[in-house]
Structures are given as structure tokens and as C-alpha cells.
Length: 426
Ligand code: GDP
Ligand code: IMO
Ligand code: MG
Image (cartoon, rainbow, N blue to C red):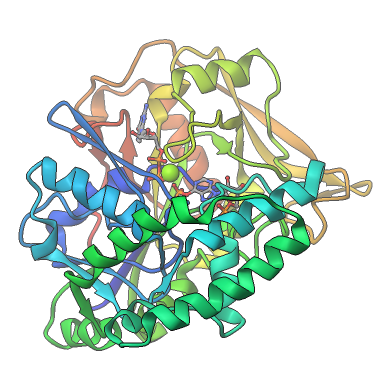
């Protein structure tokens, strides 16, 4: 069977965790392919809220295999915390979780280097989650990294010590002060736990699942506009967040990719620094933040809010080969007299509909179209027919502007607050 992919089309936090959880019953395997604990994926059901950082969002369904792929970077400290929290909730994590031997580790010194690098940038800082993501991927591509599979070798500790020695030299360059001993105890406790899990050659196992006719859903982290190659560099994360990242992050050939679910909020948010053409620095932005509870799931930072950006959405659709769209947080727009949508940009004296190369140093001004809003709350509605006419108009407007069907409309954080417009699987 083909591998379906679900990923964010904006700057992350689109609601990927919620929808992966909703779609999991249709799949046999859920696999994360990139990113690390910079992700915070929220799931709500039966009155409880859960936030996952490294573990795929299919973990709450028994008998579904959850794989952490080679493209992911794992911090054993966060990972242990996550597993312990799930065990307390009665989730049999160890039974259904598999970890790629080729996934790289985030060391305590990677976190220190992240903090030192950000501190050295002053006003130019990326706004990193400070989880050590950038330094860990740097060691991966620099061919210095330590992988999960290295835990099975007797010389793991000496490899660790050698890399930490290098990191200490870099930290000295930054003149960054730290207490490493304090950070190492939880790290090695996490390593001990990791060793007890099912460590696998995930590229072989996943391809065997494909051969056996099992269905796989690949779960993205971050969003397309944070992609290392195609985002607003340098204000991006350090991995390929787009569909292509599924192939390298899981060892799956492009010919195996099936549906690509592109998930977006009915408006936009961004955490951290970097350009955001439709950002609202006014009371409307503040109202969206309040109503949408737009505070980071990983860091608690307030998210910047703004109107939906069609050129950016179409850019992400193009990069990912999206086959169907999922619109989240539609309920947050209730109560607005009108809703603006950015259809074009004004850039260097021209009206354009693409995302230009330099959005960091050049002025980019959105051109808006205004659509009617709706006053009634929609979060308790359980069928599409009862949605206000203006919601349908908004959906149809986006479908026309993107040329793709919106197959799921989310009206609240709970599993049940999910309206299917069309069967999502062909
Ligand atoms: P992810 O990183 O893409 O998984 O998204 P996050 O979990 O970081 O952020 C999405 C936030 O919106 C979480 O707090 C979700 O519980 C919440 N959420 C998801 N879908 C909806 C929705 O349709 N309406 C509202 N109001 N909240 C939602
Ligand atoms: P999920 O999977 C939103 C942002 C950070 C920062 C930039 C680089 O929950 O959607 P990093 O820690 O990767 O060095 O930070 O990317 N960022 C996210 N923003 N959601 C995320 O993940 C993010 N992961 C990283 O805020 O601007
Ligand atoms: Mg998130």
C-alpha cells in the first residue's frame, strides 16, 4: 500500500497531532519522519489533553505501531519524560513504539550550544525552541553525530565523551557558562530507558509493511514555511518538513507516497522570529490569540497571529504535492464581522502571487480580499449542514484559490469536533 503523509502547510502548530489521532484508526502504522522535541502535538479526547513531542500521535490507539524514523532527532531527557507520562496514563508505550537505530541523539551540550548560538545573535535570533535541534542536525550533516544504534556498542561512552569535548571548545568560543554535570544525570537515565525499547532498522521494517499491504501514515512536525530549504531562511528549523522529508526521514521511495494531507489553520500563526506578511499587531490579532489559545505547546510562548495567506498556502501546496486540505480552528473565526484573506503581495512595486526569494530584508505587503464573517459559535456543531452559510463560503473560497478539496473541517480541539466533508481515503 502507499504511504500517506500528513503535514503542516504554515509555520507549525496547525493541529497535526489532533488530526493524526483522528485518522489513526484507518492506518496500521504511524511514523514521525523529522524534527524532534521542538514539536508539541496536542491531542484532546475524553476530557483529557495530551502533548507529544517525539512520539507519534497514534500512540493512544492500542495495536497501532508507532515508529520514530531515522530523520528524527531524539533528546533522551524529553523522551523519558514523555514515556513516563504516558505510562502513568496507562498507555502501553513499549509495546507499540519502535525507534530507528539511525535516528540521531540530542546531547545536553547540543542544548547548550543552541542557547549559546541564540544568545550570540542578539536581535537577529531565530527564536529557537532551544531544544538543541540545530546543533544536533549540524553534527548529523557534519558527520560527527551519535545515533540511537550507537547505544548498542561498547564504545558509546567514549564516543559521547569525544563529542562533548568538541562541544566544550565551541562553548568556550561563545564564552557561555553552564553546569553540564547537572544535565548529564537525566540524560543518562534517558539513555538507559532508550536501550530497553525496540530499536529497529526502520527503513527495512517500513518497507516490509508496505510489501505486506499495511497502511502507513507519516506525521510531519513543524510546518512547510519552516523548512530548511524553502522556509524564510534563516528563520526556519533545521530539517526538511515537506513531503520529500518523508522519503529521507523514513527510507521510503517517492513512488510509495500516496495521499498528502495538507493541514492549515483558518488563519495563520507563527512562533519565534521571522517574516509574517499577514501578521496582525492589533486587537484582531490579540482576539485570535485569546480565542484560539495561541500559546506554544512546547515553550508556552504567545503565538503571533494573522490572516490566512493564500500565496504562502499555494507555495506550500506546490512543494508538498498536497492532494487534499484539512482546515483547522475554524471555530476561532466565529464572531468576526468580516474575515480578510491575503490573495497577493505588493513587492518591489509589483503585485505578485508567489513567495519571492528575499522576504527577510525586502518589504512585502499583503493585498487582501474581505469575506463576510459569521456571528454564531460553531464548536458544538456535529454536522456540516448546520454550519453558517459564511463558513461554507469561506471553505469554497479557499478551495477555489488552491484548486484542492477541503476534506476535513475542525471546529474545536477535541477528537469529536471534527467534520468530514468527503471520505478522506480514496
Ligand atoms: P501541532 O503542533 O500541529 O500538532 O499543533 P499544536 O498542538 O501545537 O497546536 C494546535 C492547538 O490548537 C492545540 O492546542 C490543539 O488542541 C488546538 N486545536 C486543534 N484543532 C483545533 C480546532 O479546530 N479548534 C480549536 N479551537 N483548537 C484546536
Ligand atoms: P510543531 O511540530 C511551531 C519554530 C521555532 C523557531 C524556529 C526554529 O509543534 O508544529 P528550532 O527549535 O527548530 O531551532 O526553532 O522554528 N518551531 C516551531 N514552531 N511549531 C513547531 O513544531 C515548531 N518547531 C520549531 O519557534 O521559530
Ligand atoms: Mg505544535
